[in-house]
Image (tube, rainbow, N blue to C red; front, side, top):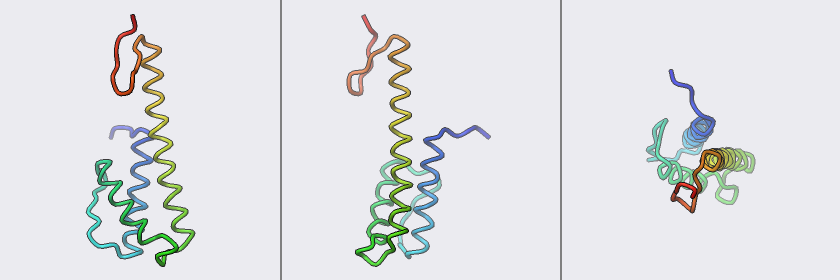
Length: 104
């Protein structure tokens, strides 16, 4: 079995939490798999946050736990992006937004 990156592990942990909260708060039609795309994760997260939020009858503790998982995934995404960017700069490439060009 291939080793998973820290980003994949964080995403898997978030999805596991989303599925657990969906069962706990009875959120029908979540429709995400164990390895969903990023837009699917965002839609599922928003759907569950609406149920878990304390103003909507959820618990404060559950809402905080869900947001901590989401923040962890976002930090790892940023770290992985920054690492890729740093490696490209060190190897003679520079980045302008989403484009990469060879340094002159």
